[in-house]
Length: 206
Image (cartoon, rainbow, N blue to C red):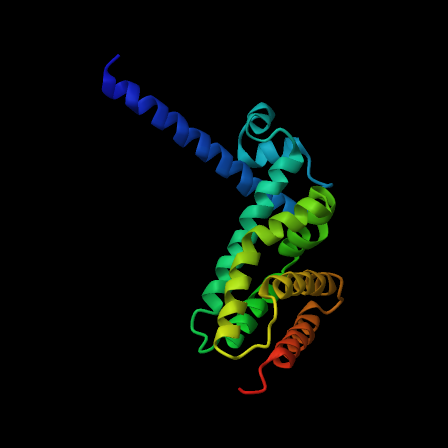
C-alpha cells in the first residue's frame, strides 16, 4: 500500500464518521422536534438517518446522548441568529433587546419548544441543562453587558450576576410562550416586559 493511500484512508474514515454523526443529529432534530423525546424510538432515529441501530449506538451510547447533541446544535443556531439579528444595533441596549427578541421569536416554533424548553430539562437534568445553556450564551451576554456599562448605558454592578439572572428570565419566558394558547401574543408581551427591565437598568445619564 502506498503512503498516499495510507494517508487517504484515515481521512475517508473520518469523513464517513462525520457524515453518519451529522445524519443522526439531523434525524434527531426532525423527530425530537416533531414528536418529542419520549415518543421517539431508537429504531425510528436509525431509520430516519438511514443507518443501523448499531451504528447509532456506536456514535451515541444512549438516546439521551443524541438528544444532547441535538440540543447543542439547536442552541448554537439560536445564538447565531440572535447575533445576526442584533448586528446592526446602534447601541448596547438595543443589541441586547434585539438578541433577546430573536430568541423569543425562535421559541414560538413548536419544534424548538419541544427540544429546548419542554424536553431538555427532563432529558438532560436541570444541572446539565443549565450548564449547556450558560456555556454558549453566558460569555456573549456578559460581554454585551460590560459594553453597555462601559458606554454608560446600564447601571450594572456585576455583569456576570445579571447575565445569569437574564438567562433565567429568558428560560422562564420561553416556558410561558411554550405553554400559552396564543404563543405569538405571549411572545410580544414577554418582549415588552424584557425591554422594560432593560430600561429600568438604564443609566439616568442617557
